[in-house]
Amino acid sequence: MPGRRGTGFWLAAAIGSAVMLTAPGAMAADKLTVFAAASLKNALDAVNAACEADVGEKATISYAASSALARQIEQRAPADVFMSADLDWMKYLSERNLIRKDTETHLLGNSIVLIAPADSTASTEIAPNFDLAGLVGNGRLAIANVDAVPAGKYGKAALEKLGVWGSVEGKVAQAENVRAALALVSTGEAPLGIVYKTDAAADPKVKVVGTFPAGSHPAIIYPVAQTAESSDGDTPEFLKCLASDKARELFEKHGFTVLVVNGE
Image (cartoon, rainbow, N blue to C red):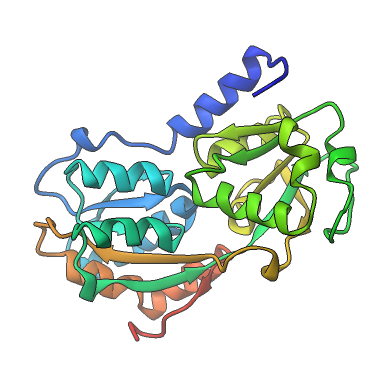
């Protein structure tokens, strides 16, 4: 990426990504293990705690970019459940017979928003050809990796559809996952960023400048499935609890749209 960046910029990116990822090799083989998109952290932590009594154990959850987690599963990292932030990476594993296809469910929906630090005066109406480059100025637009990470792919698609990608492409700061992009804005390293609505709601140090129209990008769907090599007997109960009323309440509290009703 062109341009000069200070050490603070990279530190924020490193912290933002590091806090999300638990090394799969550190997980106990006899524990229910979930690989989940970074944007699910706050909500899924709450659901995991609420489901513990029904499932019989509390899952060990590794959060990172869906792309990174899918590739780790492809390399036979130990995981019982995969929760992706888009359909593409679930399809990637399905085509390689690495998930149990009969367990796949389209669980949640989300939206993407333009954010700024909470004390920013930035304001705009997100519409075709809006002046995003002018808003970014001499700074950077924080976004997850646009080639692999779902949030980044959705963001780039929206900017292309709105006709403004070309004006900001050289000002983009790509992060390892969406929470790392959020951290760049939250710490003031970037004046603007594109993240999920749920990420923005989880961080009081940022504010939403605008919401991208649903028609400007592919529908944001979070699928979930049991992996083909899952060995934990509590996995079916965990999947069942994800679609329960108690889980619905918690997912909705954190800003997600729940796409299933009692597992249907």
